[in-house]
Image (cartoon, rainbow, N blue to C red; front, side):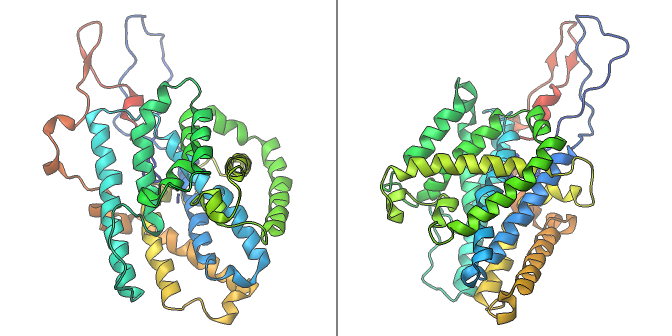
Length: 392
């Protein structure tokens, strides 16, 4: 799931540097970035494929009670699909600082959609699930909105991770402490915020060449037996594994485990997530595909598909026995993929842009538009560096 990407939403890539000819003089600055911003097809492909896996996983919730095979596949999928989404989100948060225009984007692109969709999902549950007692609470994210809440917190802490010498071990330590602290309640879904934190920090630490390393042919070939072993382990672990481990939503004691199991399982899950995410990235196409453009709308697909999957569950659409057989499960998975694909398209994005990417100029001071041009050594004004123009 996956906007945003900056969040799993739309993140714009820096233009590829132009090849100089002839070599500029030492006192000259590089030319300003072109106004047309280019996107990296690999990351758009990765975001789209990750959000499809998220949607497919949600369609399996009502179907996997009677199928150990699907339950094992479910465990494997939930081990890596959100970590992959979060790693990409962290990668596109590297340029975030407290500059006014970036704080403005954080508010309009993450905080405001969180408030709107938390209210919308709460009203939806009360009406469609006939649950008049379900309260609206901005402190207790319901269903999919936890990701926006987590992304807001992670983004705000980005400057801290950027100045630490060893940010990833520190983030892992925080996640391990959270996994053995049942006193952390549901406010802002803080267990997930803290236990998924290492994935976000890992994304902050990565560079483009790290993604290129896992996309080599040798890694692709090796990923096949690795995934097969993971599926076998997932099938074996079904009777013993509480799914809250892969949700990262509870402390060890809340699952009837000793406190020390929390740090142990947290480290093990992070390692498994890292390996399976590398296998996933190894098979993501690097060239433009028919679905590449949909990668810019993954946050739309993520937040909107929940209304479809929950309606199907509340209305009993998936209660029919044939849908619980292998062919029926495959059909439901395909329908989930089709639904989230349609929700990432341009017409849907234009329709819901008021909620997902509101401009809200009325709410901000006029000096939050962005940095002013900086004078170069010759006294001329130059545009901000291309790296600064990347969506935060």
